[in-house]
Length: 267
Image (cartoon, rainbow, N blue to C red; front, side, top):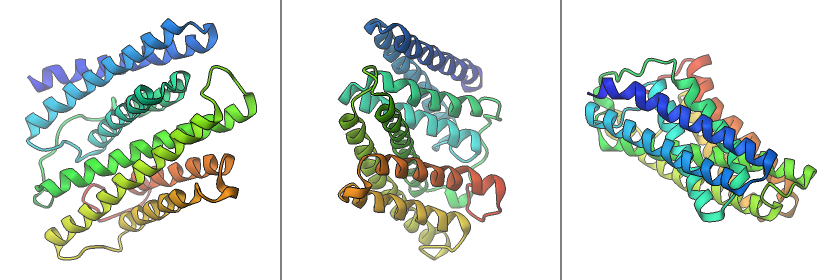
């Protein structure tokens, strides 16, 4: 049943997000309120389709299916859609959804050609600590991706002063909140990961490349939580830090696994 439904749900979610992006683009060109409302409805529909697919895969596997690149990209995309909906429903950022959902479209689209098969769970991963560690990790990544999007839009809005985009104050507020919430989730990820490592291997921290770069991500965003109170880093400086920080996140998530060798169990 899961194998029969998985592909239609995946492609339906991708198609729904694609239509949402196109409607957000039309809204920028035509400035009709019904267009962004329709786009938001499509994003919610796509998120529901992704949630159903994730739930079916989880039930079929018996654990959170994030043990390969397809699984992590799919979960990352799902978390980013949830993060966007949180900020959209709270702050009504409207046209900003075009850039955020375009990033999500790229993330989900790059996962579709990969093998969606769920690999067997190795003993070291067979613990609730693994599930919580990964869930908080990609939840943090999603908030960092949101902060990256707001950073890019802040710099664009500062130059363009467009009435279609949120004002600079709102973009800055969303950016700072996304960084703070992402840092909180990633802190929980690091704590639970340390406990998991101790239970599985007898040590809290390993000096492998993935562990070192994860610590750098945590330190960088911890510094950003402080930087928002420093005048010279406010505004454009904070936006640039958000963009640079997400570059570190992408290297930690994808670059290490694709370009380097690591003994981290998910690489």
